[in-house]
Length: 360
Image 1 (cartoon, rainbow, N blue to C red):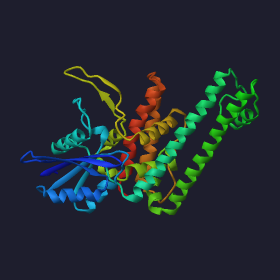
Image 2 (image 1 turned 30 degrees about the horizontal axis):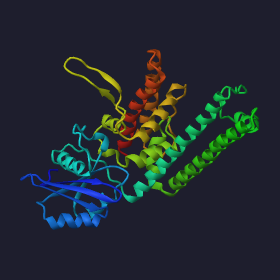
Image 3 (image 1 turned 135 degrees about the vertical axis):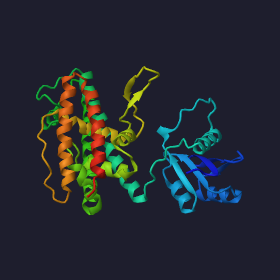
Image 4 (image 1 turned 90 degrees about the vertical axis):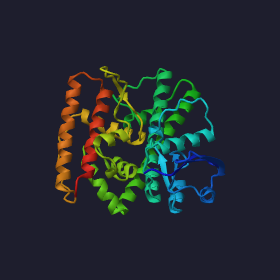
């Protein structure tokens, strides 16, 4: 939609830099306001801008409260996808110029909007991302333990893999030559154990919410039919995407997660590189982890849950067979395992989209 007045807002925790541009005359008005949405709404109404008026600000740590307040007051507001904004070439950057640049981008239709969730949807998204944050902390804590063993030239040979019950029992009773090393190692090991308890608590809360929300469970059931997608991953898909109908096809959904290749082509020269990584990094990591399941042998089994439409179950079985063959073909072509995993994740994203939009 084209607006007669475009208002760019550079949001901060304590203030908002605002710039309004009238499309017909090019008139520009700027001001610095507090973070209170009521003050911004009053400023817009006092200036009596030509209708319709549209506001825009970048998605970020300030969240969606400003957008909700403006919409409730009858003022259109768009939250811009930061990763999709045009690259800036000017060398002057401050709050005023940021607000002006946003208003100009909005006026020319160069802003990609993000979905503004409801308060309930946003709270579920916070829980989903909390699980991701704890999992990331756990990976780092385990890496510190492994690095310490390497640093002290300590070999563990009881089992091929670490972080088994045998490894944890060995680590708990191992004594180094220096008492300080033993203390440091125990502290690093205890950090891993505490984080494992935290991730169990978060997952238990996720499962409790799923059990108390039949609508959420029904939406998730479609995704749990897919090989490699468990309840936690399905919960993240539902909470992060909200509505799959806002994407026109599977390729646009893959782009939403940054799983499309970057490109630097000109004329007859076509050069495609690594994935763009412009999008939802939380979901991208989940899908890449899920794609790792297709590197191991498995038998595709159709879900027997009668509450899930037959077309969905058949599609999920077809997805498993297709991606299994795809992973095998990539292995035969001697593509590196990580690249193959990302390629499978990109195709998995498209299957997820089509399974999500299948009619009940």
